[in-house]
Length: 192
Image: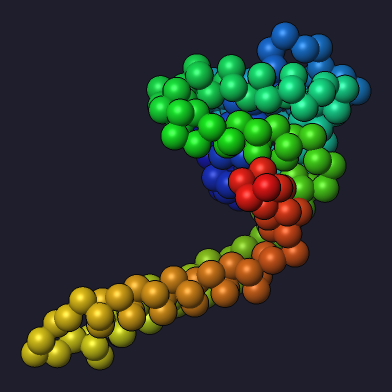
C-alpha cells in the first residue's frame, strides 16, 4: 500500500530505471542502498521505504552505473532487458532504434536529470494536470457546440486536431525546457 503522501510517478520511474539496471555490474558510490530500495519496489514491497523517494537520486545512481560503459555495452543491456519482457521482441522489431534512444538517454548526463525535474516539481505537475483536465472539459464543450443535425468527419477532425494541439502547447509550455535534451537525442537517433 502506498504511503499517504507518496505518488505513483516515482514508483513508475523506479520500475523503469530498475528494469534497465544491469544485474551483472557492481553498484558504485553508495548506490547499494538505493539498489536495495529499488529491489523492494520491483518486488512490490512499497511500504518499506525509510526516506522520501527522490528521483534525482535514482537518476544519479543510474548514470553512475552506465558512465564507465560504452554506448554499445549500454545498448546491449537495454536490448537484453527488452527481450525479457512480454512484448519486448515485438517492440524491438517494430522500433529497432528505441533501444539506441534509451541507451543515449542513459549515457547523456543532462537529459535524465531534466526529465527528473518534471516529477520533482510537484506544484507545476499539479497545475499541468489541472490544465489537462480543462482540455477534457473543452473537448466536451466543443463536441456539444459542433454537434449539429449532420455530424461530419471534418467537425470531428477539427475537434481532434484542436484539442491535441492545445495539449501539445500545454506540455511544451510547462515542460519544454525539461524535454529539450531528450528531444535533441530523439532527433539524433530517429532523424539522422
